[in-house]
Amino acid sequence: MPYCPSCGTRLPDNANFCSSCGARVHSVQRNTSVYDFNKEKREAIDAGKRALDSLYAARNELNKARNWGIADILGGGAITSMIKRSKMKDAQKYIELAKRDLRKFSNELSDVAGLMFLDFDANDFLSFADWFFDGFAVDFLVQDRINKAKNQVEEAISRVEHVLRQLNA
Image (cartoon, rainbow, N blue to C red):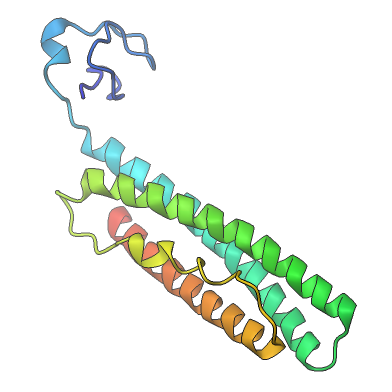
């Protein structure tokens, strides 16, 4: 896919003008790709930051669910269980968002991976929540699953932060 010679935006093969800056794309330029490593690196960093934000939000909601789970174990009633389930549902939304953002981060990293050694595989984390929100019957089982999901989110945060440090170095 060709790139704009002025701003580096990716263009469709048949583009005559850049959709971002309006520069004319000549036929010779259409057949050559201008690779802007710094732009690709910035895009990867931005995607990583979005993934981190989603992971932080998921961790926050999992902490709330864990706290309500402890209260439920210690004798909470129907209202405590309802609040815990609500927090778990909120955590699920952020986990799904984090999974989407991790996929985007992984895709952006593939644009710079040939020029930098980056150890990141989003597939490690894309399945961590698939089992988390299945039906539960026992409070202890729920609490254990909340803790496991929280540990996996913490691991994902650590890995994304590590890769972002490499990109920023």
